[in-house]
Length: 75
Image (cartoon, rainbow, N blue to C red; front, side, top):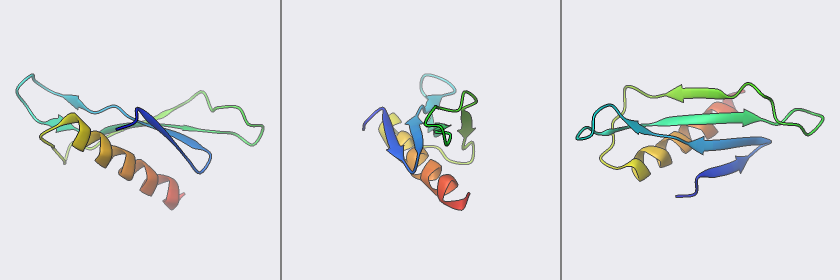
């Protein structure tokens, strides 16, 4: 999976993590919005989905990016 993706004037990055080395992966995304003057907002949104756990980092990151896209679409 790509480390970051551009979507509707936003930069989305999957940054999933493990709570312990042998545990599943928790989806996390970071979202940067581009302001109207084409600069990146310096206050990124970080969001963890503690209600979801995946076997691999790649699966968790894919879910996180899709979750971020839904978040952008809602706003």
